[in-house]
Amino acid sequence: MRKNIPKIFILAITALFIGTVMLDSTADARAGGSRSSGSRGSRSYSRPATPPVYNPAPYRQQMNSPAPPVQQPQGGFLRSMAGGIAGGILGGMLFRSMGMAGGMPGGGGIGLFDILLLAGIGYLIYRFVAKKRRENSDLHLSEGRYDSSGNGYQSSPPPGYQQEPYGQMATDQVDAGLSYIRRMDPHFDEERFKDKVMDIFFKVQAAWMNRDISLAAALLTDEMRRIFQDDIDRMIRDRQINRLENIAVRNVELVEAWQESGEDFITVLIDANLLDYTADESSGAIVAGSKTEPVKFEEYWTFRRTIGDNPWKLSAINQK
Image (cartoon, rainbow, N blue to C red; front, side):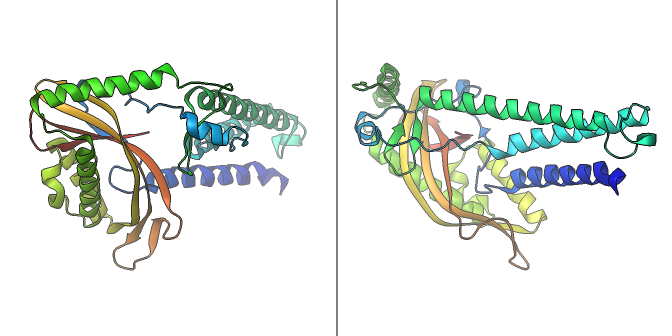
């Protein structure tokens, strides 16, 4: 029995690895979920701007509250851990096959080399987790942390802290971009644009659920229409339907505005939550997601149009 322990361990790690990959591939199945796609013009390969990270008023309210624990992303770490451990065990088995096993005659069972190998892998995993936690903590201290209660971005600046210059600089850049847009469209209104964004958001999600992107084709660039159509074709082949329920858009914030090559561009950060699950079209059985656990997400949606009072179209979705 003892000599079968490595094999059992390898099978368990392999199952963990496969399950993690499958979970990553099916979670957040909404339109544009879990990946970035489309084009942002010359900014396609740059990360969308981050909103101002400090809000003095909410900070005063939360100053004495303990910071919530940092939740580590699960998918990438589990894959790394599973791959590392499985690779280490396989390496141990290889050494045993070369006559380098210790402890048990004939190289069977778990010997001293296996114990040292597992101890070393455990230490590396501990170092990896500790490093990621430090990096994540430093990131939240420098960029702020979004409070899901709606109080804005939180952090731990010193008492008397005034809004970081970057926040004002980002606001100035958006205002400058909007001023260029208004030169060719004097009637452009930011609030009406946000309403239009929400209208497009809901129509795109409805077309996605109906697996008929033609319902929203006029609201999309040709590139985004092809991307959505490819995803819908895959769902039809798999005989699956993505259901989106109780959609609530909590906030739409302009984070970038610019002009290039005769076109206007605006990127917004959409903060929303919904029930997101995928069902088998024949049986109705849920194959991914949950009908009871809402998903909260933040995404950057970029819209473009020909300069002037022309229709806006969705040209890119980027994950935050």
